[in-house]
Figure 1 (cartoon, rainbow, N blue to C red):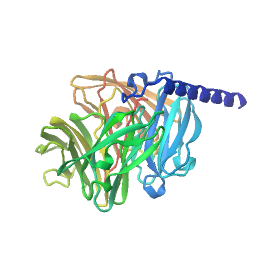
Figure 2 (figure 1 turned 30 degrees about the vertical axis):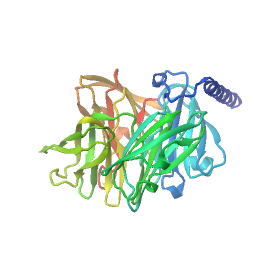
Figure 3 (figure 1 turned 90 degrees about the vertical axis):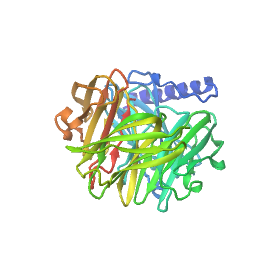
Figure 4 (figure 1 turned 180 degrees about the horizontal axis):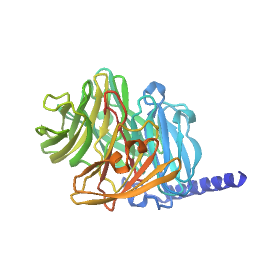
Length: 449
């Protein structure tokens, strides 16, 4: 015990020393860290999480760290919060293929929380989970200099809040612009906003964009880099919209509910100077469904309703293939008349982790090859701290496969971690939680770590 404690203490000191050296040597810039430095073989890595709140804020939850490697990893966690007077540090050890969770509200008293985690190696991912609703958001391994989020709702009974964390040792400055069905807005209070080093800041969109049901957001970082999540309270539910750094002209949403009593909408934000014609090819069961389309004016937002829609039958989960004449930001809003959750369109990755950190399993989970060529995919299934199976499959361009079919049963995903990899960024994983009506809450896949 004494020797393991000394080893952990030495690892903590080494990580903190490395972080200090990097902060001293770095120039003030708005260039984000180089993502190529991440991966399972990295000598060190970092994870940043923001958006969880205290119980009053409606998004109380935990951050779960997942080790996808056979090596032990030591993690140093620093927690900050709005309304807190100081940061709090703690350390955890992740054995091979192990998990551990941190509850920010157990570390310090505050309102909205951010965590910074330094890891003595790669291959560790992290996920935030809202305890009450099961809604999820992946933690990031880097700050960004440009961020988009769409679909936010500021109508009565809802609240949209930007949770902004500065992971660097210097102050950051940013602008926020918004896009609605009425056009472009850049409210003065949202321009030139400053957030201090290693500090957490929240901006309530409701204060500037009043009673609007579909708000697109663009955050432009003028100095430094930031980690951003949109906290959305919608009726009786809440979710974390983790947004995107990349606009898209193509994409796939493989699991969109068409269940009776459910709501499913594709919310689109067009932050560009040209009109975007957005088309959705809809596949549901054996039905032939006419494509759904919408023209989104420059600097505007729009909605395409999937459920309820008399042109689309209630027949399980629909697969949507999106194409647009201009790059846009797309978010899927799903739920019931009592409230919606918001899930951004994910960009293809070369390494994706799907971790059932709640142990509740999935209603369905799929893997899509977003590339224009056939892609070979390798997978590793981890359960109870050990690799239980490995394999590979080949997916044609644009092809989608059920992960339950791939693994020999969807129940094998319950409580497990699935790591998928390909030679190029081609993989998109979609998963839905077990809910009634079916498919109204999506699970978030994680970065490869």
